[in-house]
Length: 306
Image (cartoon, rainbow, N blue to C red):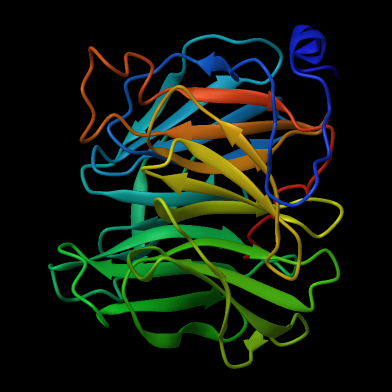
């Protein structure tokens, strides 16, 4: 399936030297949308769809991978919805305001583990590892320093808090060999890395990999070469860094708040964005999902095993 063959004529594949700004036409709108904070894009290749959330609106949205066009609402869950991942038994596993839940295919939400008893806390970005565990970051609604944490829902070991003392954990990902776990802490403007053991889902101490200038590090994904694609909120950019943190390429967007990204099966990079805090007259496309031909593939979305 060639998701957007016409983009390949307008946005050729690229690889760039350190720090080079790529001369290319602007990424195209794939899903015209007014998401307040679009986030958590997940490509479900078998179903031929892209799903993503609007965090503060609590909406789960679906778009057809085969052609650009408006999204269809799957659910409005009545609370903030940080991210979802496909579930082996059908539907999705969800990081929501109260903790971890499951969404049926008809969009009905059941909160399974209300691990965030404090109403001033909420879940944010989330993703499954290759063994089917669901990882999510929580944050204070006012982003108070040190109130954020990293949690994991493992159906064999239950729910556990893996790391504390964060502020706005975001942008989760793993190296292609599962040896490294990546996590952005947005308000601290850093992307962290830690050793990862996929057999038992344990991580080592975090260390700083990237210090971000000119914006806040938001969602990320990892390509087949082990490089990170990082959405930089406020900068209007997605940046590609190598596994050592060196900047390789920068893609500019017609919106200031790109929020996250995910690879499609044909090398298309889908990028969500936010309308929140923007001026409609200056950024009429804010809140839409964009598509860029990255010329690279990423790992397929992992499925929650329950």
